[in-house]
Length: 130
Image 1 (cartoon, rainbow, N blue to C red):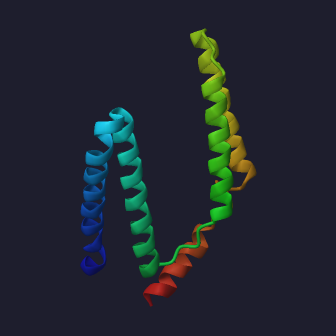
Image 2: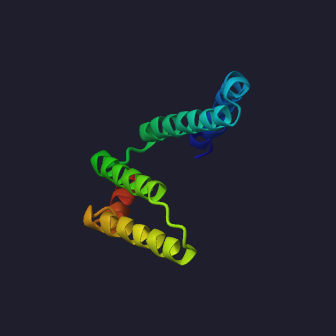
């Protein structure tokens, strides 16, 4: 178990080095945006490497098409929230609550929140450990 998890600190250290390098390169030119970009790049690097390493140890069948749909829906809702400017605080809260409810409904419509069978997961884990 410890041999499998020992790689995580190395990945984290590598992501920290990526963040430092990108920060040193970008912050002098882009200030706050340079820091934002370096954080995004290092986070994507860390997430990608952890996914690749973890997938070699234990494959998880991700539904990338569904994840892409959800990401697209999220971006559309975020653009709506940013573009529609409501001055009244109560109306703004109501609008944002409605967007959140819309997002949850769309998650249910894509069956992202449902359809996960815990029983099959437990059986697969038991079979794998045997």
